Image (cartoon, rainbow, N blue to C red; front, side):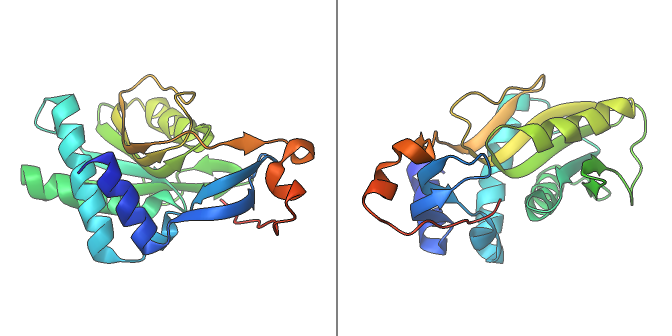
Length: 198
């Protein structure tokens, strides 16, 4: 699946929004990725995650030998589950796990699952901007004595700024155009400001 096909699918599902947005950082932008809008369609989610697993297989080159997929909640849960399904289907690994880390006191933790030392995981996420939640998830895996084989993303909107110790594979790389509120041309045009959330 090419980047153009991914972008087209995101637009079709309403996951690539265009307008005037205030990002979590306080900056303004004319584009916003709301991947929940594409993940609400199981066939599209499967199509994207199958393509992501194909790329992961090309990069890892080890037959996708992993014990599981871990994702940060909330946005990454569907991606993690679909990636685990696709890896399991490709490798025949029937007991491949899909687990997630969730917020507790504003920090990601494993509450429902355990990671065993020596296990190998793919970290899956829908969108990365700065990479903080992915790094927290990586830290959970390594603190348990396990290994992160790779990081798989639907959209990397960091513009190359998010970097990790494991290989990072994304279906779409994008760097959003952003402005400080006092220099935002969309504000000067009088366009209504939307707070889309994360």
